[in-house]
Every structure is written in structure tokens, then in C-alpha cells.
Image (cartoon, rainbow, N blue to C red; front, side):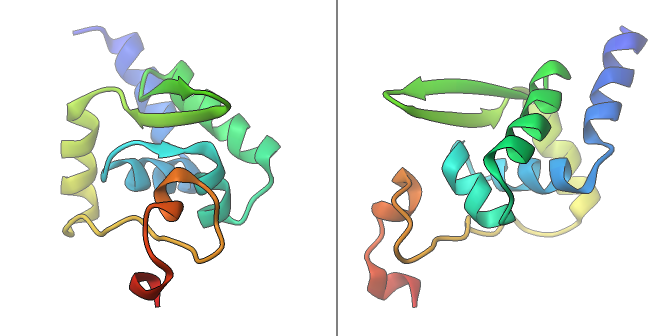
Length: 112
């Protein structure tokens, strides 16, 4: 076991906003604009938190055009979150009027 790598992952987990981001990613990949909307935080702040998660090896990215999508990099992170949160996975929040791919694929009637 690489204790340095494990310690880096633990440092990445040690922040409430980063834990919230990881919780969102339990349901699958999510674009940055959606994470910003859910957290109600500026892009710079969200990017900073995502960089820490990337550097710790907790998330991976995929680019599609101008959109950047994040997903969990390691299935062990999902199992740890399932255990620590001690609750079922809930659907990612969707917002009427949001143009991100997650929200724009859902009709407004299903959001209300």
C-alpha cells in the first residue's frame, strides 16, 4: 500500500465542498457548469476545488466541445462515500432554465 497516495486522497476528501462535489459524482459524470449551479459558487472557486480532487486522483475529466465533465476516478471512492454518508444515492439536482447537458435533457414539467 502506498501511504503517501492514500494520505493525498484523504487530504482531498477533507473539505465539505469537495465532499459535496464527490457526492454529486456518485450518480455519474457531471459538467462543471452544473456543479457551479448546485453549489451556487463562482467558477474560479469550483475549479480550485476540482483541481484539488484531480490532483488527489479522486476525479477524472472528459471534454466534449466546450463542456468539461467530471466523474469519480476510483470506484473505491464511491464505496467509501456510500459507507460514510450512510444513505442511498439521490438523483442529481436539476434546474429549470439551466443550459447544462444534465438539466437540458429533462423537461421542465419533470423538475417541478
